Amino acid sequence: MDARAKRAISAEQAELLRQIPSVDELLLQPRLAALSKRVEHSVMVEVARAVLADLRGRIAGELAASVVAALSVGDIEGTIAEWVERILAHSLQPVINATGVILHTNLGRAPLPESVVEEFRRTATQYSNLEYDLEAGTRGKRDVHTAELLTRLTGAEAAIVVNNCAAAVLVTLAALARGGEVIVSRGELIEIGDGFRIPEIMEQSGAILREVGTTNRTRLADYENAINEKSRLLLRVHPSNFKVTGFTDKPSLDELVTLSQRSGLPLVEDLGSGCLIDLSEHGVSEPTVRQSVEAGVGLVTFSSDKLLGGPQAGILAGKKDLIARVRRHPLFRALRVDKLTIAALEATLGAYLRSAWNEVPAMRMIRMTPYELKRRAENFIRELRPELPLDEVEIEIADGASLAGGGSTPSQSLPSKVIRIASARYSATKLEQRLRRAPAGIAVIARVEDERLILDLRTVFPEQEPLLIKTLAAVLH
Image (cartoon, rainbow, N blue to C red; front, top):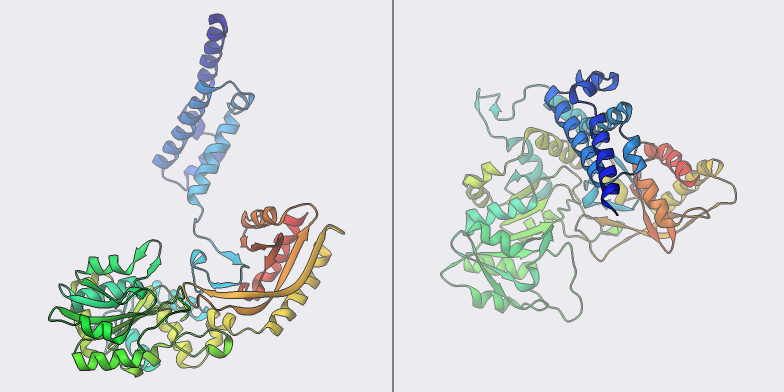
């Protein structure tokens, strides 16, 4: 390109730059003036400056027609307004989970019972007796609101709550084993998700890891031979997010309890998934917290937002003296839960105490039968078909499998009936993308198998079905 062409381009760029309106001029435009009544002036100015800086950069780098077109005041106003409205919009929003994964970690794990909403409203909008003893008129402890419910449901002598299960393990190790050795099988040194591993949590607690056995085989003698004057506790980690099969061996829970009693070392068990009731007849074979407590485990840690079906929290249940030692540790205060979590957990546990398991969405979904799901799928398709383009969509009911999810029951699935959809216009992957991008105002998360879009109604709330039908009709046209 010759020098005259470069000079012409530079002159044109300079002219385009001169056409860019000022921030003050833009903020007087009707749409931005209206937004300014709802948003801090400094935010409006920062966004406007960022948009104009981007526009200047594009002009400096290219002379595309799109840049010239974007120079109108109306277009710049629209770009700024969309940016500000995106800031104002809630980033955290509901989605329709049609994956069949009940405790979907990326989708918030357990949906809470309806009763929790009322507890949230009561507790959040008024003062409460969170840490106030109404009988004595003195400061109380926030543990009392869930302690009795937990002890009755688990059989434990005492129970406390922190903000998640990793925190429960951390504070337990810090309180009971700091500076001493914790004996644990190599096969139980798990990663609990997002890169966090049991050895790293142990290191942060100040406890010393003493590995015994091998990945696939650990015997009781391995634990016995590792006990010395530095030993502080025995740790058993339930492998709720993986399974080792084949040539394996490990001591039973009863054997470890006996060793704990004989050695005087507390036995701590991290159960993870936190199952409170026997779900084996529904296809979920996980040990319950009560089984561990009644077997004689000193302290059990587990999650509240997995199979229990409550809010995110980590629960510690066990012998009174061990719970008291953990509660006195400074980390306990740093990891304590707020009043909304306590309100949600109390409402969820109340449903268990009343044997009203169907009030807990996760329990209700686990207990659904293939027959129920087939009937729902038939009714759903009957409502959907009239909304679909003729001769362009294949839709059928097929056998499928749902998952408990959330790092629980890794080798078990729940027999299900799923809806399979194929479109002559769009690939299954494209349909999944279109559903996820929320054409009707709420994102739908589905899955793709064998070039078919799969919808599992087990994890779709009945009241969401009309909106799901509307969304499917929109993306299939």
